[in-house]
Length: 239
Image 1 (spheres, rainbow, N blue to C red):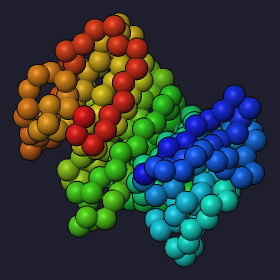
Image 2: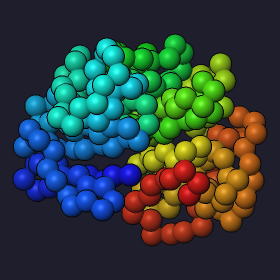
Image 3: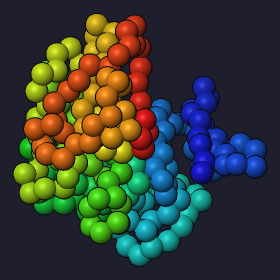
Image 4: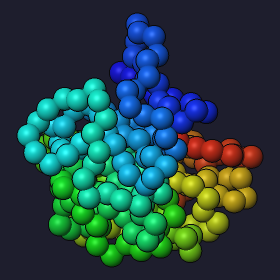
Protein backbone atom coordinates (compact mmCIF):
# COMPACT_ATOMS: atom_id res chain seq x y z
CA UNK A 1 0.00 0.00 0.00
CA UNK A 2 2.95 2.33 -0.54
CA UNK A 3 5.64 3.25 -3.06
CA UNK A 4 9.06 4.86 -2.83
CA UNK A 5 11.34 6.72 -5.22
CA UNK A 6 15.09 7.19 -5.21
CA UNK A 7 15.78 10.78 -6.21
CA UNK A 8 18.76 12.25 -8.06
CA UNK A 9 20.07 13.78 -4.85
CA UNK A 10 20.33 10.28 -3.30
CA UNK A 11 17.38 10.82 -0.96
CA UNK A 12 14.29 8.60 -0.78
CA UNK A 13 10.67 9.71 -0.73
CA UNK A 14 7.71 7.44 -0.08
CA UNK A 15 3.94 7.79 -0.30
CA UNK A 16 0.75 5.79 0.14
CA UNK A 17 -2.82 6.21 -1.12
CA UNK A 18 -4.28 9.55 -0.13
CA UNK A 19 -0.96 10.96 1.08
CA UNK A 20 1.70 13.13 -0.55
CA UNK A 21 5.26 11.90 -0.95
CA UNK A 22 7.46 12.53 2.08
CA UNK A 23 11.22 12.01 2.49
CA UNK A 24 12.50 9.12 4.57
CA UNK A 25 14.42 10.75 7.40
CA UNK A 26 18.18 10.50 7.62
CA UNK A 27 18.83 9.32 4.07
CA UNK A 28 21.02 11.40 1.76
CA UNK A 29 23.48 8.89 0.31
CA UNK A 30 21.27 6.13 -1.15
CA UNK A 31 22.12 4.28 -4.38
CA UNK A 32 19.31 1.69 -4.38
CA UNK A 33 15.98 1.24 -2.66
CA UNK A 34 13.97 -1.98 -2.27
CA UNK A 35 10.46 -2.45 -0.92
CA UNK A 36 8.77 -5.44 0.67
CA UNK A 37 5.24 -5.89 1.89
CA UNK A 38 6.05 -4.88 5.46
CA UNK A 39 9.26 -2.82 5.25
CA UNK A 40 11.67 -0.97 2.99
CA UNK A 41 15.46 -1.01 2.71
CA UNK A 42 18.05 1.31 1.22
CA UNK A 43 21.62 0.63 0.10
CA UNK A 44 23.96 3.48 1.03
CA UNK A 45 27.03 4.60 -0.89
CA UNK A 46 29.16 3.22 1.94
CA UNK A 47 27.86 -0.32 1.33
CA UNK A 48 25.79 -0.45 4.51
CA UNK A 49 22.06 -1.19 4.45
CA UNK A 50 19.28 0.49 6.42
CA UNK A 51 15.67 -0.64 6.69
CA UNK A 52 12.47 0.84 8.09
CA UNK A 53 8.92 -0.35 8.71
CA UNK A 54 7.84 -3.54 10.49
CA UNK A 55 10.35 -5.83 12.19
CA UNK A 56 7.84 -8.66 12.59
CA UNK A 57 10.07 -11.03 10.61
CA UNK A 58 13.29 -9.34 11.78
CA UNK A 59 13.74 -7.52 8.48
CA UNK A 60 15.30 -4.58 10.31
CA UNK A 61 17.34 -6.19 13.07
CA UNK A 62 17.40 -9.25 15.32
CA UNK A 63 15.11 -8.94 18.30
CA UNK A 64 11.49 -8.30 19.15
CA UNK A 65 8.70 -7.17 16.86
CA UNK A 66 8.62 -3.38 16.49
CA UNK A 67 7.87 -0.66 13.95
CA UNK A 68 10.29 2.12 13.01
CA UNK A 69 9.66 4.96 10.57
CA UNK A 70 13.31 5.90 11.00
CA UNK A 71 15.81 3.74 9.07
CA UNK A 72 17.71 1.21 11.18
CA UNK A 73 21.17 -0.01 10.15
CA UNK A 74 21.08 -3.75 9.48
CA UNK A 75 23.80 -5.34 11.62
CA UNK A 76 26.30 -7.63 9.96
CA UNK A 77 25.85 -6.29 6.42
CA UNK A 78 28.89 -4.42 5.08
CA UNK A 79 30.21 -3.89 1.58
CA UNK A 80 26.85 -4.49 -0.11
CA UNK A 81 26.57 -3.72 -3.83
CA UNK A 82 22.93 -4.69 -4.44
CA UNK A 83 19.84 -5.41 -2.34
CA UNK A 84 16.52 -7.19 -2.84
CA UNK A 85 13.49 -7.43 -0.59
CA UNK A 86 10.12 -9.11 -0.40
CA UNK A 87 7.50 -9.85 2.22
CA UNK A 88 9.46 -11.36 5.09
CA UNK A 89 13.15 -10.79 4.45
CA UNK A 90 15.92 -9.19 2.45
CA UNK A 91 19.22 -10.14 0.80
CA UNK A 92 22.32 -8.34 -0.43
CA UNK A 93 25.14 -9.11 -2.82
CA UNK A 94 28.46 -8.18 -1.22
CA UNK A 95 31.68 -6.95 -2.83
CA UNK A 96 32.91 -10.54 -2.52
CA UNK A 97 30.03 -11.59 -4.90
CA UNK A 98 28.60 -13.69 -2.09
CA UNK A 99 25.04 -13.23 -0.82
CA UNK A 100 23.90 -12.53 2.70
CA UNK A 101 20.26 -12.58 3.84
CA UNK A 102 18.28 -11.64 6.91
CA UNK A 103 14.70 -11.91 8.06
CA UNK A 104 12.85 -15.02 6.89
CA UNK A 105 14.29 -16.25 3.60
CA UNK A 106 14.33 -19.71 2.02
CA UNK A 107 17.30 -20.75 -0.07
CA UNK A 108 18.43 -24.35 -0.05
CA UNK A 109 18.48 -25.70 3.52
CA UNK A 110 18.60 -24.66 6.30
CA UNK A 111 16.27 -21.68 6.25
CA UNK A 112 18.03 -18.34 6.62
CA UNK A 113 16.70 -16.26 9.51
CA UNK A 114 17.88 -13.11 11.26
CA UNK A 115 20.55 -12.07 12.01
CA UNK A 116 22.18 -11.61 8.60
CA UNK A 117 24.17 -14.61 7.46
CA UNK A 118 25.84 -15.77 4.29
CA UNK A 119 23.83 -18.03 1.99
CA UNK A 120 25.81 -21.27 1.61
CA UNK A 121 27.14 -22.29 -1.78
CA UNK A 122 26.82 -18.92 -3.53
CA UNK A 123 29.71 -16.98 -5.04
CA UNK A 124 30.11 -14.92 -8.21
CA UNK A 125 26.55 -13.57 -7.91
CA UNK A 126 25.55 -10.87 -10.42
CA UNK A 127 21.92 -10.19 -9.46
CA UNK A 128 19.38 -11.39 -6.90
CA UNK A 129 15.61 -11.24 -6.69
CA UNK A 130 13.16 -12.27 -3.99
CA UNK A 131 9.57 -13.46 -4.06
CA UNK A 132 7.05 -13.94 -1.32
CA UNK A 133 5.85 -17.50 -0.77
CA UNK A 134 2.71 -18.00 1.29
CA UNK A 135 2.65 -21.71 0.50
CA UNK A 136 5.38 -22.25 3.06
CA UNK A 137 4.82 -22.46 6.78
CA UNK A 138 1.00 -22.59 6.80
CA UNK A 139 0.27 -19.14 5.41
CA UNK A 140 3.19 -17.30 7.00
CA UNK A 141 5.19 -15.52 4.28
CA UNK A 142 8.68 -16.77 3.49
CA UNK A 143 10.82 -15.28 0.74
CA UNK A 144 12.27 -17.37 -2.07
CA UNK A 145 15.62 -16.30 -3.50
CA UNK A 146 16.72 -16.49 -7.12
CA UNK A 147 20.32 -15.75 -8.20
CA UNK A 148 21.81 -14.79 -11.55
CA UNK A 149 25.51 -15.62 -11.66
CA UNK A 150 28.19 -13.83 -13.67
CA UNK A 151 28.56 -16.85 -15.96
CA UNK A 152 24.87 -16.54 -16.93
CA UNK A 153 23.62 -19.44 -14.82
CA UNK A 154 20.41 -19.03 -12.83
CA UNK A 155 19.55 -20.86 -9.62
CA UNK A 156 16.27 -20.56 -7.73
CA UNK A 157 14.63 -21.98 -4.64
CA UNK A 158 11.92 -24.53 -5.40
CA UNK A 159 8.48 -22.92 -5.35
CA UNK A 160 6.81 -25.93 -3.75
CA UNK A 161 9.08 -25.63 -0.68
CA UNK A 162 10.19 -29.25 -1.10
CA UNK A 163 13.29 -30.70 0.50
CA UNK A 164 15.10 -30.77 -2.86
CA UNK A 165 16.31 -27.24 -2.22
CA UNK A 166 17.64 -24.91 -4.89
CA UNK A 167 17.33 -25.72 -8.59
CA UNK A 168 19.52 -24.69 -11.52
CA UNK A 169 17.36 -23.44 -14.38
CA UNK A 170 18.43 -25.12 -17.62
CA UNK A 171 17.81 -23.97 -21.17
CA UNK A 172 18.65 -20.30 -20.60
CA UNK A 173 21.24 -18.46 -22.67
CA UNK A 174 22.30 -14.83 -22.59
CA UNK A 175 20.44 -13.87 -19.42
CA UNK A 176 20.62 -10.14 -18.70
CA UNK A 177 18.21 -9.77 -15.78
CA UNK A 178 15.85 -11.87 -13.65
CA UNK A 179 12.60 -10.95 -11.91
CA UNK A 180 10.52 -13.01 -9.49
CA UNK A 181 6.74 -12.98 -9.43
CA UNK A 182 4.69 -14.70 -6.76
CA UNK A 183 5.07 -18.27 -8.05
CA UNK A 184 6.86 -17.62 -11.32
CA UNK A 185 10.14 -16.11 -12.53
CA UNK A 186 11.14 -14.34 -15.74
CA UNK A 187 14.46 -13.56 -17.37
CA UNK A 188 15.22 -10.95 -20.00
CA UNK A 189 17.83 -12.07 -22.52
CA UNK A 190 20.48 -10.15 -24.40
CA UNK A 191 18.60 -10.77 -27.69
CA UNK A 192 15.65 -8.66 -26.41
CA UNK A 193 13.42 -11.65 -25.71
CA UNK A 194 12.29 -13.11 -22.39
CA UNK A 195 11.67 -16.53 -20.92
CA UNK A 196 9.60 -17.40 -17.86
CA UNK A 197 9.03 -20.48 -15.72
CA UNK A 198 6.87 -21.54 -12.78
CA UNK A 199 3.12 -21.54 -12.31
CA UNK A 200 1.09 -20.50 -15.38
CA UNK A 201 -2.43 -20.81 -13.99
CA UNK A 202 -3.21 -17.19 -14.85
CA UNK A 203 -1.14 -16.99 -18.03
CA UNK A 204 1.67 -15.20 -16.21
CA UNK A 205 4.38 -16.93 -18.26
CA UNK A 206 3.29 -14.99 -21.34
CA UNK A 207 3.16 -17.91 -23.79
CA UNK A 208 -0.60 -17.78 -24.33
CA UNK A 209 -1.27 -20.82 -22.12
CA UNK A 210 -2.97 -21.17 -18.73
CA UNK A 211 -1.49 -24.32 -17.23
CA UNK A 212 -0.87 -24.90 -13.53
CA UNK A 213 2.47 -26.14 -12.28
CA UNK A 214 2.21 -29.25 -10.15
CA UNK A 215 5.56 -31.01 -10.51
CA UNK A 216 9.16 -29.74 -10.53
CA UNK A 217 10.03 -30.73 -14.10
CA UNK A 218 7.23 -28.48 -15.37
CA UNK A 219 7.84 -25.72 -12.82
CA UNK A 220 11.44 -25.18 -13.91
CA UNK A 221 11.21 -25.46 -17.69
CA UNK A 222 11.45 -21.98 -19.26
CA UNK A 223 9.01 -20.96 -22.00
CA UNK A 224 9.37 -18.03 -24.37
CA UNK A 225 7.24 -14.94 -23.81
CA UNK A 226 5.20 -13.93 -26.86
CA UNK A 227 6.88 -10.53 -27.18
CA UNK A 228 9.97 -9.13 -28.86
CA UNK A 229 12.16 -6.05 -28.35
CA UNK A 230 11.93 -6.51 -24.57
CA UNK A 231 14.13 -4.17 -22.56
CA UNK A 232 12.91 -4.86 -19.01
CA UNK A 233 10.50 -7.20 -17.27
CA UNK A 234 9.03 -7.56 -13.79
CA UNK A 235 6.61 -9.95 -12.13
CA UNK A 236 3.56 -9.54 -9.91
CA UNK A 237 1.32 -11.93 -8.02
CA UNK A 238 -0.50 -13.38 -11.03
CA UNK A 239 1.06 -11.40 -13.88
